[in-house]
Amino acid sequence: MNKLNYLLACCMLSVPQLSGQNANEILQKVEANLSSDNRIVHSEMTIKTRRASRTLEAKTWAVGNERSFTEYLSPAAERGTKMLKIKDQLWMYSPQADRTVQISGHMLRQSVMGSDLSYEDMMEDRRLTQIYEAQIVGNELMGERPAVILELTAKVPDVAYHRQRMWVDAERFVPLKQEMYARSGTLLRRAETLEVRQIGRRWFPVEMLYRDMLKQGEGTLFKIKEISFDQPMPEHIFSRAMLK
Image 1 (cartoon, rainbow, N blue to C red):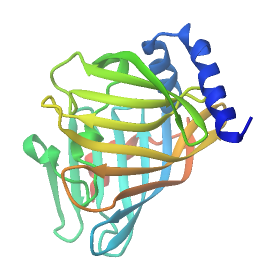
Image 2 (image 1 turned 120 degrees about the vertical axis):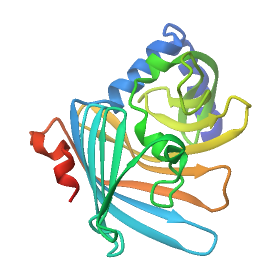
Image 3 (image 1 turned 180 degrees about the vertical axis):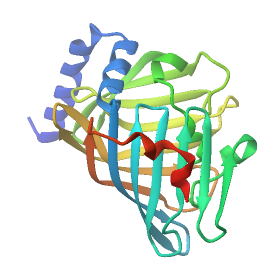
Image 4 (image 1 turned 60 degrees about the horizontal axis):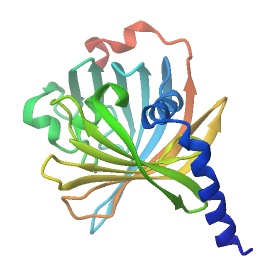
């Protein structure tokens, strides 16, 4: 049996193993990998346009999905830019203007720092099982990884994406690829996981490529340089006083 046939066989063999689980159970395992009480992330975001690319380095402190504080460390033009998210409110401080603005309304659909991600993407803090109905629609090999394909349909009206299609690693339970659609059926955004690492007992994506499908460019590459979970975290980080 050649390698491709072996991988296909492995993929087919994985289907019965997953058949005992429904889509929501698979989604819960994904959430168990991605969620934590708190986390500290040192990351790098490279934004690739048609003519140039630029890389931003940032450090983020987050508690659950409701509170986070991000400070951009480089390049010099962006150093000192800070973002604070508390529940459904988001503020951004620009050192160049020495001004703090609250991001709300239509501004939430704008790009974060020129990337392929929107503020709306950052604001979504609910668990997928709370806002989507899930069903299994297929299986596929993603590179050498067997994946189960989930179709997620919004069950609440206030979501950024009415429908999502998610390719979930059938053994590690992390998303390998996501497609996000508008209610009209238009593909708005695509995310691909390029690297997954085992951190403690969980599998976690550490390199992702995001693409805003409505604009030109080669996408935004997001790399996690360092991440730690469930660490002591001072409460004062999540206050507006930290923005300046």
